[in-house]
Amino acid sequence: MALLNVSLSSAFDFKLCRPPRLHSLSKIHSSLSPHPQVLADDELKLGSNAVVSFGNSISRASFLALVSASLFFVNPALAFKGGGPYGQEVTRGQDLSGKDFSGLSLIKQDFKTSILRQAKFKGANLIGASFFDADLTGADLSDADLRGADFSLANVTKANLSNANLEGALATGNTSFKGSNITGADFTDVPLREDQREYLCKSADGVNSTTGNATRDTLLCN
Image (tube, rainbow, N blue to C red):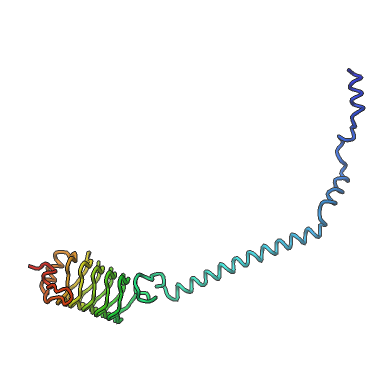
């Protein structure tokens, strides 16, 4: 057995198990690695490229933010395009006092929360338009087609509603028609509070020229 171990030991080359010397590792590292100066230059270029790329990203972001801000501050109402065909003009949340919309087709136009004092809507097509919480004090709505329009919470005091067709319009909440001219107006299927109905019946008169309905009948006045 001892002779077998000796023969195996002599047959095995112990030089293969020796770790390489330090100067050999240095030579290998030198042969595989680029020149230190080249490596430094490459790192510098990478750093510069990263800074330039970051700077470009910041510049683009700043530019887009500036454009967005300028659009917003130039015309804050751009966020409220609203429904309706009235060109690109914004009609929601605006002061449109005295503006003349007479005879225009404004189907489903959005006038929510707008100030429309003394605005003129004579003969306008306002089917399904929204005047939610709008101020229509002294507005001229005579001969207007207001079927299905929303007057919820609107201030319609001292307005001219003569011969207007309000069939199916909404007037919920604190909608006020105080002092308005309703001669010939058609209030068919308008959900009014009892106190509103009683107030309007005091001045209700005339017949709507379009529907042929008497104002008092549409208000279910006694």
